[in-house]
Length: 104
Image 1 (cartoon, helix red, strand yellow):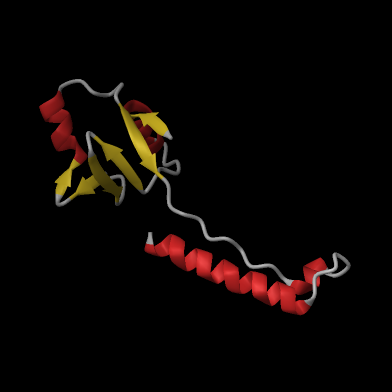
Image 2 (cartoon, one colour):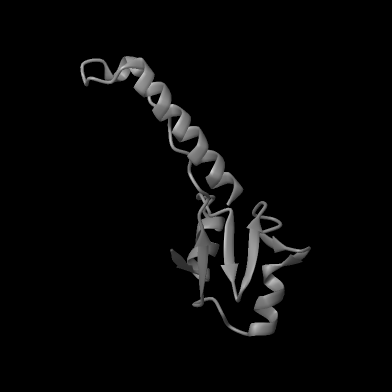
């Protein structure tokens, strides 16, 4: 997903939720707070603005964090013909998938 830099600035100015990681001109930047803005290897994203001229209409790519899959609860599925053993096996698979997502 992409967003214009000016729209990102507006979100920061309005104290709205902003992405934690973005990619701009091939570099990944991390959001700390409204005062420090986005940083990468000790450099602010503002540095690239000065070198690149007017780039407020440029887009940045939002790098989304992988969300964990939730485990199922046997009590929530009574009557759907899922035994406790099946729920346990599904939850084991969920643990493996979540672990793989974190390692990626």
